[in-house]
Image 1 (cartoon, rainbow over the protein chains, first blue to last red):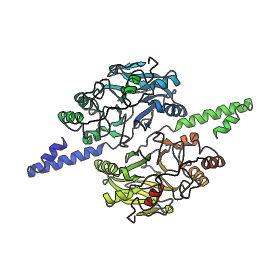
Image 2 (tube, each protein chain N blue to C red):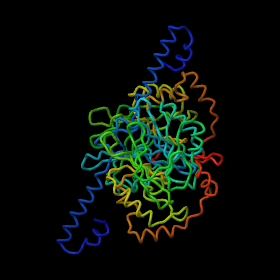
Image 3 (spheres, rainbow over the protein chains, first blue to last red):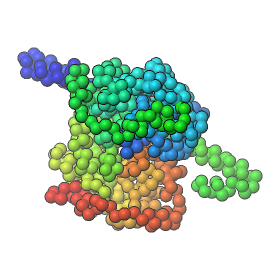
Image 4 (cartoon, chains in turn green, orange):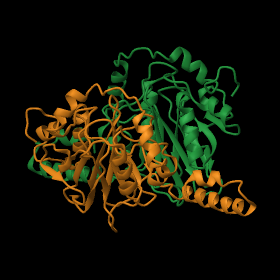
Length: 283
Length: 283
C-alpha cells in the first residue's frame, strides 16, 4: 500500500478514514519491524571501511569458523590497500578474493594492487562488465569463502555490468541477510545513469526486482555514502528512498535532470579499472 | 603477556623456544577470539553516523522493544543535526537524550540545536567537564533509555572532563558490550593530550583501567576516525594500538612529540561547547 494512496484517501469518508488509520498503523508497525542494524552469524566476521576522498565503502568479510579464516574484500580502493591488508594480517585472516561490484568511475580499484602485494588472491568482477579479472561472475553464481557465500545478482542501470552481492540464504548464513549494492542503490539515493551504458529504466527495474524483493530486514551496504550514513535496510529504502519510491516515469525524469558534473577521475579510473586498476597487468 | 616479551625470549633456549611457541599460539588464538563485529540484542537499535569535515562519529541508540522507542545520540555535530533528526523521525524513535563524551575542540556539538528543534530532549555531559547541560553525569551513573542503559566511566587525559559510555552488563543488554570512548581511545590511536587539561599519564591510566579492563570482545566506537576504520575491539587495541600497547613512559614520550597544529576550530568550538554549542543559551 503506497503512502501516496493513504494520503489521498485520508478524508474521503468516515469509513475510509478508519480504514486509512488502520493502514497507517499497519505501515508504521511494518516500518518498525526491521530494526536490526547488524547481522548475526557465529561464522561471519565483518568490517566496513571508508575511503574519504571518493567516499567509498570497502567491506571485509571472513568465515572465522573455518580453520583457514578465508576472507574477501568488496570494492577495495587503491589508496587504502595497505590499510586493508594490514587489518587482514592483524586479524589472522586469509584473503582469497577481491571483488568489484562494477567498473568504478570515481576511484581506482585496489584489486590489482592487492594481487601484487598478496599473491594468491583472485580478482572477481561480472562478465557483463567486459573487464579483465581472474574470475568473471554471472547472475546466480556463488562466491564461497569457507562455509559462507555471496550470491551474484545482476543489477545493471548505473553501468551495464553492475552486480549486487547478497549473503547466502540458509541456516548457517548471516541473519538478517546483507546486500552489497555497489552504486545501484545508495542510502536514500542511487548511482547516476548517464554514462558507462547507464539506463534509468534498467536501474529502476534492477532495484525493484533484485533488491526490493529481498527480506525487508536485509541490511543494505552501498559502495558510497556522501552524507555519513553507514547502513540501511530494504524496508527503509522502500519507504524513504526519495528516488526509488517514485514510479518509473517520475524516476526517469529525476535521473535525467540531475545535471551532474562529469567525474574528474573518469578518464583515468575507467580504463584502469577494466584491468583491475593496473594498466600494465592482464588481470 | 606482551608481544615484546615473546619476541625477546624467542631464541633464549630450546625450553624457552617451546614455551614461546606455546605463548604465540595462545596469543594468536586469543586474538582470534574476539571476531564479533556487531552487537546483538533484541532490544537495541544502533546506527553509526559520520560527519566528514571533522571526521566525527555520531551514534544513535534506541530501545526498540519499549513502546516509546526511546533513543539517544552520542556526540552529535551541529552540521548534521537535520540528518540525524530526520533519521530519528523516519525510524519512529523518540529522542530523549543528546550526550557528549567531552567538550570537543574540533567541531560544535549539536546538542543545543537538537534541544531547539526537538524540545524535550535533555543534554548530557560530565560534571567534570565544567560545562552546562540539563544533566551532569558522574562516574558510575547510568543513562537509561527504555530497558537499556549506558554506564558512565571517567576517562580523563584528552580533556580533564572526558567520559566513556559503556552499554550495560546484564542479560537483556547488548552482547558483546559496546564502548563509546570519545577521544580517549581511537582505533589504533588516541586523542591528543596537550590542551584542555590534557595529561598523557592520566590518559594512559584511564584507558588501561577503564577500557582495557572490559571484556576483550567489547566493541570500540570512537568519536573520530581519520583512516576509515569504523569499529575495533578491546582485544584488537590491546594487541595493536601503536601507542597504548607501549609502557607508560614510552607513551608519554610519544604524546609529547606529536607536534600537532593548534586546532583551527578551538577558539570557537570550546566556548560554544561549554554551553551545548549555542552561545546564547544556558544549557
